Length: 400
Image (tube, rainbow, N blue to C red; front, top):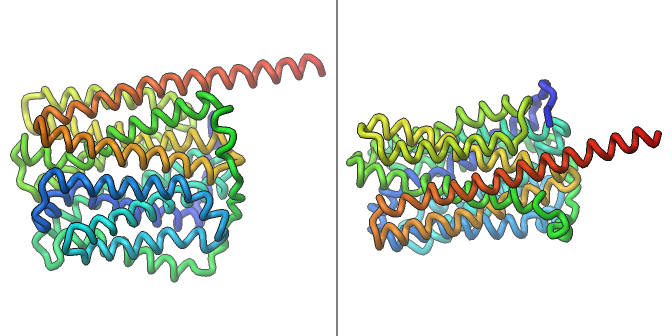
């Protein structure tokens, strides 16, 4: 579906963009800060893998129960409860000095982040109507900026007082300032309707893009969480330089998502996702086999760019396919992403513990290949649905 070129970015639009930025700025601590977190708390691989698991558990809980919470509290309280919990959990993680409290704060961060993501995307889609796909993609560009800036903040503040923890303090302060400044801003009625009962009847219209999301996000987060360790172990980067270099992996997503926001005017989200998954496979092979470190770093940039498109393009697909149930659709997207984050980095960490990180990294192209396969099925289901609508319109016109 081609979208109109005009998109009105008002105060509510920018508020959603900034809250998404704050979330991903804090979320970025899950990957680039891992070497520092392991050092500060004296963790091995077995212990470190529980952090993405805790984050993902929170993500899954919010994806499963976020719609119910939104219906229960409604309105402004539903909009602001998640960002404020996000700020509180970020500050708690910054202050944590032991394994269990830090894991609990990470779980809360995942829960709050998932609900923040679903609420902001549903708000953008409802507020912009026919521009839902482009508005949510631009929101994901803002998310990419936060993810790309996070490793840079970690690297720049590594030797400062409080060190890498500034990447958690800054987004918390940002949320508090936005909550005060936007306390009188009018918010749209999201109309939280029940939608789960019809999932089975929707067939591949639901399952194909959802499974493409599941495998694609699994590949993205596997690389995000273990990428810095890969650079340290196999390219022999210092920890601070590895954290900064992960900006290449995360920063590539900014370029890719800006491109997708513009390309969505002419191409469907399903066809764009197929193309980017092909690029991701080529980028991974470049990371493994190109001879020089700069070439491998460029391949990591391209890998991050391509995998970063999975979540926004899948979100656009769901919000456009289910326009009457956008809170439900956004929650199911968060649920799929949470399940991916829950399982993939944990399994890759287990494989790294047993076989080494170089061998375990081949988990990423396997996941990407599955994402490509289901993206192709999703594209076919979208084409079939479009053909059915056109045939129905022709028959109706013929009877008229």
